[in-house]
Image 1 (cartoon, rainbow, N blue to C red):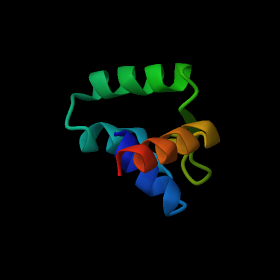
Image 2: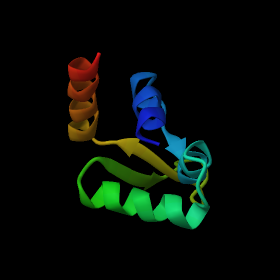
Image 3: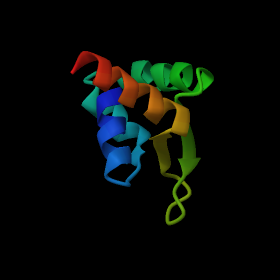
Image 4: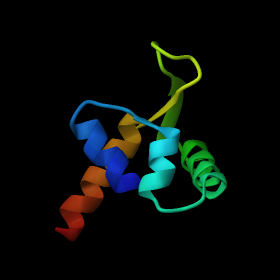
Length: 76
């Protein structure tokens, strides 16, 4: 999930919460629970789509993006 969010952020796009759950290959309830945890940790933020208020988007926060960038640098 974090890798997908990282790539999406690098490409300048947000993904839906549903897509984040699908990419993680977990039930939606589990994915949403993890997104809540990541949000509580300040790594992701959720918002509504400007075009469709029913659609929830998720992106990494600036801190989340920087922390993952540092992680990739250290492991690569």
